[in-house]
Image (cartoon, rainbow, N blue to C red; front, top):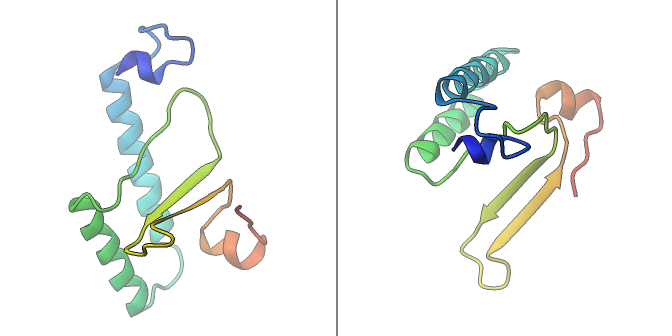
Length: 107
């Protein structure tokens, strides 16, 4: 795990305890983002559905720690014979501010 998380392959770059700290910090930051604004009932249902999908391993969140990375990749697996996997790649800020004020764009 250390080797996978280090930029140079140097195994002393990060340890398991630091990984746990970073995951906890990111979860707390995400929680704060979700509390901004007045969520609607539909927002709450969508977040509960997302939490359920994460617990059921239908949605997998991956964390990249080698160096700061702003890019995002979204993969959508569908029951569609002609297009079973769709992907979106970019560095968009998909928060309320990003979507409503900043004109974010992904490819």
